[in-house]
Image (cartoon, rainbow, N blue to C red; front, side, top):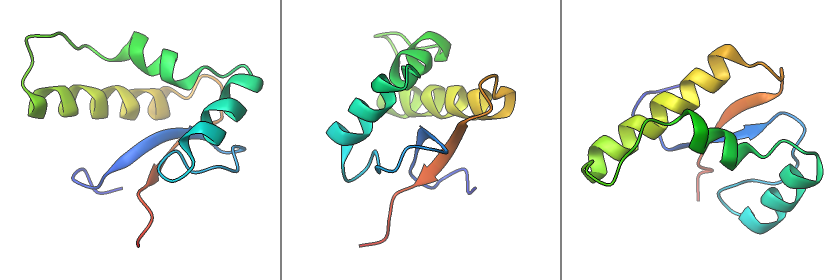
Amino acid sequence: MDEDSEVMLTTVDNPWSPFTNYDEWYAYDNAKGYATPSLLARIANVSLDLSAADLDFAIRQAMDEIVEQNVSGKHVLVSRPET
């Protein structure tokens, strides 16, 4: 996946897009016990002192790390759908 593309972290079994149906995506994620946003928050090395660009970079690095390690075997990155 292109390093500059807009991506979000999800799981292979979640039928909802976190880009277009976030509320449904979030409800499904929590119902399955994945807590993907919380996992991302724990892994991302962020602070209030970061610029917007550095914050985006840190979050992307954390998402890449989660997918690379993939402890649950379920996490993947998805790109923003074309409109």
